[in-house]
Image 1 (cartoon, helix red, strand yellow):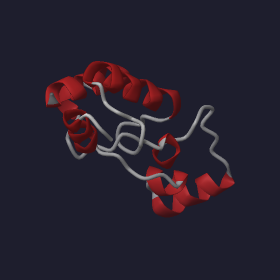
Image 2: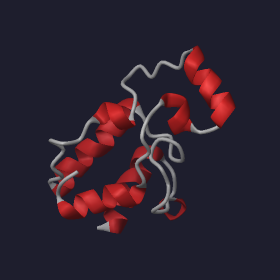
Image 3: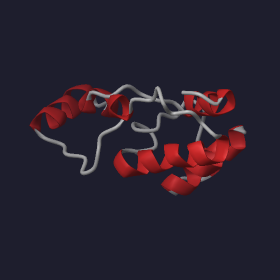
Image 4: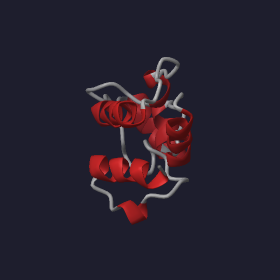
Amino acid sequence: MDDEVTHIISIETGIPQNQITENSTLLGDLKIDGDDAWSLFEQCYNTFKLDLSDFDFNKYFRCEPCLKGPVYLYRKIKYRDEHLASNKIPITVKQLIDACKNGKW
């Protein structure tokens, strides 16, 4: 299942599968946000029957359009971290794989 999840991520991002690690974060490292993030989780739902009823998308990703105002720019310069800049909680590839294995977020 690990390879299946990383394959889906690879297709979604265009990043070669061998460059995606378990510690890669979806938003920060792989630049998955907004509609792309929603599409990824939708694919995991369809492929692995991942229950997303407890998943709060807005805690982890921005909605489209992903507006990046002055507060974001200030935080991005100060912290150099996409999660801190956008005030979002990071999700790693391993967390997504584990959720798919367990069938529940």
